[in-house]
Amino acid sequence: MEQSRYGFKDWKIGRQQVPKVVAQLHNYITQSRTRVKGNKKTSTAEFLPLLSRAKEALTASGAKSLKANLNGVVVELNTNSGHQAEFWSNNWWKADDSATPDAKIYSAMGVEDVEPSAYYCAELHSSLFLNTEYYGQCKSWALGMSAAILERKSNTLSIHGATALYKGRGVVIIAPTGTGKTTQSFRIFTKEGGKICGDDWAYVAIPNQIPRNPESPLVARQPERALYMRSESQKEQEWLREVFDRSLCENVTMRKEECEYPMGKDLCSVTKHRCVFNDGKGWCYYSFGNSRVLVKREDILGPEKVADEVPVNLVVLLRRDDHSPAEVKLTSEEAIGVLQKGEYMVLPGAGPKEKWGTTSYEPWYNPYLLELNDVMQANFFRMMFESWRVPCIILNTGVAGIEEAHERIVAALEAPA
Image 1 (cartoon, rainbow, N blue to C red):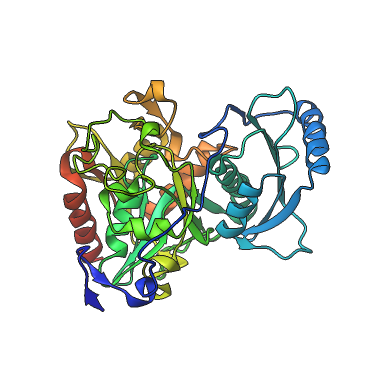
Image 2 (cartoon, rainbow, N blue to C red):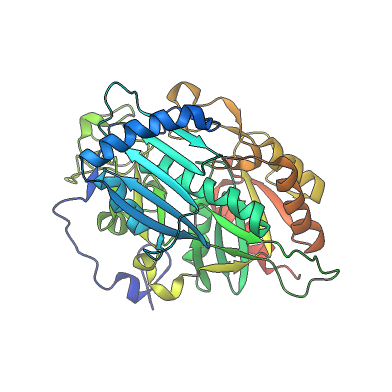
């Protein structure tokens, strides 16, 4: 390893063949560049006529059928969107072609006289996307469908959170979108002794028989092969630009005139540095708050810096405001109360623009749960905090800042068990 200009030790396998110049970005602009209106409680009677229209469009345009394995749950995508098919294939572990799907997603473009919309029918274990190619909503509903099945059949808790490993100890970072899960997991990832597991989702299986004094920790498993990241992460971590340049991108801004932030002559209003377009670059990763990039984990710093599962030794909740303490150690019931309420401030790129800066609520900080069961969620977390004695802290990145929050996480991981 060699010390790099990015402030951490370079892992040669992950960076040895980085191209110096990328002539063309692998970027796709979707018609709907964010989540579309959805009905997560669609009845069978409402769903089937819509599905029939979708199937007509899929049949007429040569749709693809792709099966993914999400922690043992087989989810099948039927789509006529090449963009969604490409992202889906690179995002998940592939299921056997002969496997019977546990859940299905139909995503059809070209359905006439229908606004971009999404529907979920619990009775049919099926989701339907009409005239929208935005991958983020398709991905999150796939996770939500698998979560419902695993909760019922396998006593498994699904967490909207990032997971990382540091010197053999694992942390689960839970927070609403845009609060810093990816940033904090990457800080651990790039440290010597650190590994990345995932930046968005984890499955934690709870044994049917709870041991009185568990000798082994719970395990958080990663369902995704790749990280579907907000590309604005590159704003805080300049070195990620080279990684993103060779990855699959969605809705990255390719022209300065399309920047959604106020523009100066030469300086970026976000970073206060020279505008990347004025600097001769052909695209900007933080000009649009909802642009995304699908990054293979092993392509960042090498396969030895990747873990598919981590022990659950610490749970960290993140919030961002200007008045709460920098750190609070939570009791089991306090943590469950914070999680269940899910209060947060809507940040740019994390919802409709008219709601930016307002307070909203996201139960369990998990917008992906299509079949929300508060009792099951509370019981799962209670067993984690009480039976397995997993400590939980809440950090305020609005007061502590990114680096101080990172240091607090590392200190908690290094503290005696």
